[in-house]
Length: 413
Image 1: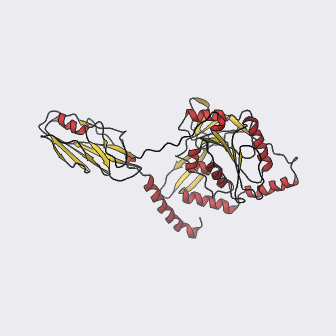
Image 2 (image 1 turned 90 degrees about the horizontal axis):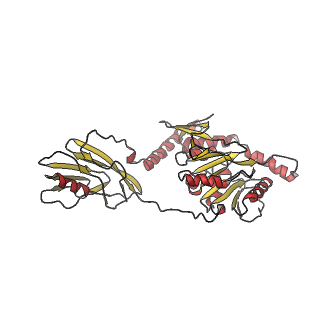
Image 3 (image 1 turned 135 degrees about the vertical axis):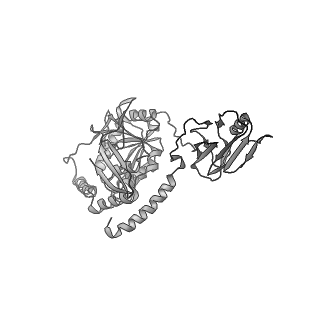
């Protein structure tokens, strides 16, 4: 960011960051400490309610010696509390209010009333939380309530075979000979699998073949814009990303990647290796008052017990299987037009659980000039001019990290 603009950019960034924090900061993240030897019984977790709907709070009771009078108080901030109709010797204050007080001379009656306490949220929020304060004499406890609108399932029919589960997606620019080799290698092993191609070539050419969909973009629109386009058209549970100069081999076993994903529903992305290299990396995130720092370190976190050739990591090579919905949630920033890869995993840090399996491999096509026509050689030279990022593009990318990711430093080793 240019120095004359820095203070104004920082001001706008901090305003956006405060809105971001407000949108994702839940009351349930507050630290709660339990007091020792409490006579109070209450739920530690697991109380979930629908917005605006009355729901019982399970597990409330008091264990105390015999007394002439018992009194408890419960309070909330984002809803109201109520209990069943009181008996002759019971006294209740605050029915359908934020503070509910119950008094009675009988411990059994007290616990009966506590077992019938209900909570109703008063603000419609699809994902929120409240803290219940529960007090008896000098004893107090706090426990959380999750206010949540259940998600409607979005399921994909796996069909009868691998082609019903996976769509192959790629992006091409001026590299039709390489794309043709890729498609032929795919068809050697997967004859019916759908292939989606985003194409922003200067003079696009029609790609022929069955189960191939070509999406023409504005010329040189860019790398991540093309990724977004093809991902938006996927209608299967999984997508397999490949570069247009890759080559399928007998070890490019998509079924094994699917097996890993099906065995670990929490996984979002699983990569393979390209010519024997997995290129796994960790992203270490550090928060700071004036911005955050991200460090990229080569390597992984830990192996996956059920799959000894697979490890958990933060980012993988450009050959990966991913859950379609997970990729769509993170997306690819279309402002990154030329060289970008790590940026997707930076944007997905904390959202995407990523793995890498070294034994599932794909090859790079051999690079040769011998069989290229003059037209193809010219296209290759033009491709290189677009491939090499210009200084202003590097500056734009740094500015993007600075504002969008609230980053003040990024290191790689």
